[in-house]
Length: 81
Image (tube, rainbow, N blue to C red):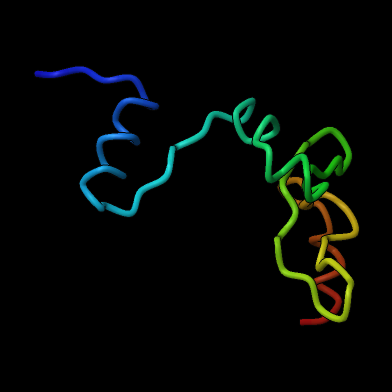
């Protein structure tokens, strides 16, 4: 089996006209030039994430806080049911 680095494989795919992109590790995501340039890294509590690239009327659509932990907010839903 032939082995290639990620960069080599992406270059070969691009040369062959195959649309492709890398599968990133978390550290790769936060070091990506586009993520840095567009300020897309989110710090929501103890979890880092990447903001949606969607901007509507000049405002980025971003969650106000982290996703709830398992069971968190359950009582809020129970009162609605």
